[in-house]
Length: 112
Image 1 (spheres, rainbow, N blue to C red):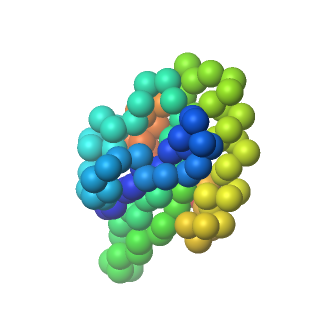
Image 2: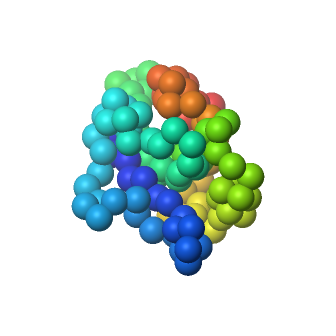
Image 3: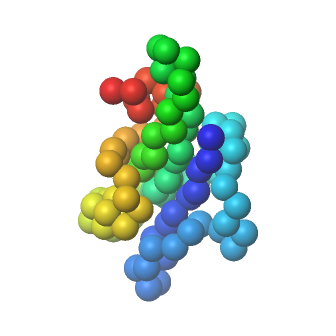
């Protein structure tokens, strides 16, 4: 698995990688720890799935993390940018999550 967090900067409203050291996260545990408690984030995720015939598939999806405690201003900024990030990243599927614990079922959500 590889994940990269993306945020919208509050001052300039630009979309940037959420770290000065943009190394991909390689586990769900790492990703869960990196998600903020009250600010939305976009996560570009490549997650390995084993198909019924044993082959591996690596779908590339956009997670739209929208915690229930985030403010209205942040929610509006991120909601308005979902399609832009989706198109720029070249992903086909957007999955919304509200709690880091939702990542425990990410494989099922990707398969849907």
